[in-house]
Image (tube, rainbow, N blue to C red):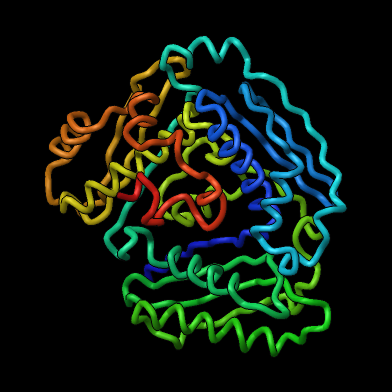
Length: 353
């Protein structure tokens, strides 16, 4: 039986990702104007309605309408295929609960939960190969001008025993009048270009818009909500996923800062040669600064004893929320850079260095 693992990624025009981008635009705007902002924002989009809800405690009042417009502009109005001006935006935002604030104000975690970080030596980005391939394809699609639209998904099934691509799948929205053979020809070429960049096989099974048509997309085909694409935000489905979403939250929320710290640690362990693959779990209790547990799994690829690796973690990282925020400079990050195409594997991010 072949060892085939599948990973998925979605584009910045996918309705869930539109919501993540709006939420992170709000987080970034608030932190840039008030570093003490506490943000926990959720976004819903359907047809021409957008609901922005959650908690916000900040001296800065964001211009929600302008931030939504900026997100649509970054995606590209022509690629979206609809007019963002027509959207009705409803705001349901209140201040952070004082019960939560009293624990966070003294350095405690903003919530309980567990976060995971993962790294593997199979790509330069230290990310799973099928996930990198799926992401690279969508980044190429984003640059294409013409009949393709912004809503897209890519999925790669990779045979680890043979070290080759088994199946490459892409569903991409297109203009009404475009014929499927034209779409298939372009997307197939881009798939093979991506494979060739990694010196991989190009004789894989190709699936492009397998329903035969994808003219209606975005929020008009499906609703979008923040936090529904955790696999796409992290490692494509390889490894575990933490209990909470990252986008829409300031870094006092360990869903965000803890996940970044766990990735940093896993990455450092692989780069140091302690293991070829590493997954780190960190767990917190609300209002408590130190993690309640740290667990390391190297899947039999370790070159050092697990105890040595755990001692390395405890001796080299401050995993309190404040320690993570300060060491990674999380109050100065532009979170617009991570709200689409993944939070990891991008060399400019502080947890990737």
